[in-house]
Amino acid sequence: MALRAVVLNAKDNVATALDTLAKGENIELVFSGNKRTVELKADIPFGHKFSLADMEPNSPVVKYGEVIGLSTAPIKTGDYVHIHNIASARARGDLKGGTK
Image (cartoon, rainbow, N blue to C red; front, top):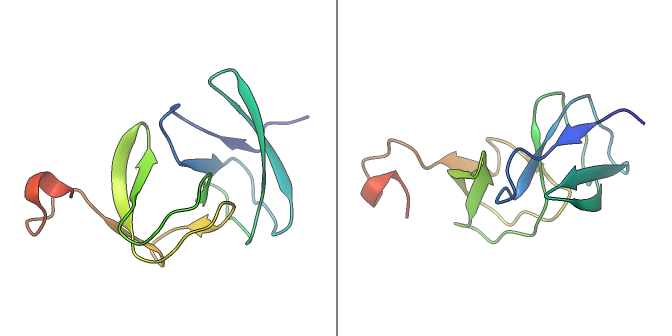
């Protein structure tokens, strides 16, 4: 079976699509020696992110083992994660150190 998505760091709470993925698909992921399956709640375009965990608003979104943004709305496992539900946390003068 071809790899359809990747988790780049064990700390990540998002995965990146390596193909265009469809709502309702069950995507198998292997990271940190563990297998996990995530049911997608939305279509995920190639190269975009989907959630591996439920997140409340203002939760850190972690990719590459680093906080890349903060959720702006509730995000459920399998949801599409993009500019409609996250805001950048880097280089923001309104947040101490760029993040909360």
